[in-house]
Length: 430
Image 1 (cartoon, helix red, strand yellow):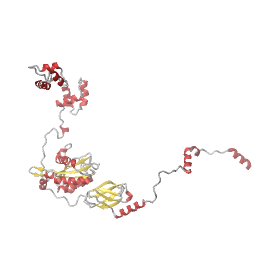
Image 2: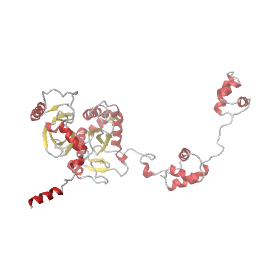
Image 3: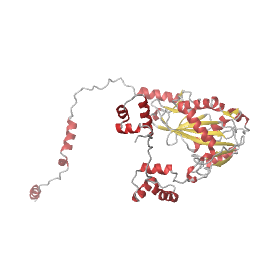
Image 4: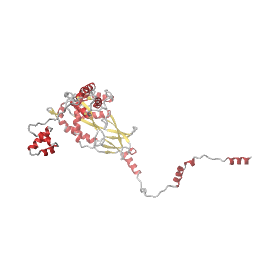
């Protein structure tokens, strides 16, 4: 019999004057089927499944998933097939999903599947922190952005860093605090890299001392409940989708400048209740930032170019020409106007004054410039380039060495002594 859709189509075509044969060809049906279906008073039959092949396996499946809510269906498929289930894995997953046979596991569900509510935050009470990892960057290296968000107003700022160790974390947090305009009473983090001893929920010594110097308390999210710091999580998502996806940047310094401009011009203008994020943040009672920054020392490895220059913060600084194509360490203290370039053994190679980030300056110390010019001039020569099509067969010396290689046994034969000559000498002496 025809399905409902086919019967509607056949009836409409019949009214339009189509012949039975034409309708049959159009629907791919037999002419007798079409003729019977179009008789007056004939109603099409709906397609129904006569039996439910999975019904008898429902009790067993329910019991097994009740015993183990995380049982993989590929494992369950082997069990029910031994009981006579003949359908595919896709059929099993569809039936389990359609019948809601797998029980809900609250411990593994996170936020999904349960009620949530926005947690109110008092003004000036909490700053939430988190790393935002950007794996695909125009400069080809993973970038880490330390994002700090005021929990009450939603104002956030970020700092690009090349690594997530404690030194870079503390340097980034101080930069973000300055850009936020002040300090809250408490910080909220999760098991954040650089702040917590790996594998524990204890603050590492440097991060703890940093928080003591600022007189702020630290709250850690409960295990597997990172959504407790949902304000900064939302900031990270907004930052990645609204800014990073379309940011036209080529270097970390350009990305930092673009992020700062985006936060001030667009992110702070987002509406919040009857005001904006920026207006709410301006009204928060934040504590002033200490004038003297926390003494964080940071080191980063850098390669030396053929011009004896080291790239740092969007500028290039000189080193002695002996370190061309080598790897050196850039070492600085947060808040200091200068920095050092050291060898991998710790020897100080140069001290420079920092230029503004992303300025594109090339800074050469006079002694480095003189040494580089001397090295370059010493490498000059007036000799013409070697001819490429000359005839130079192996010399006699080379042939002699080749003969030693071809007949090495001649060099290692033992000395042979003729005893008859020895006897002749003995008789003469007698």
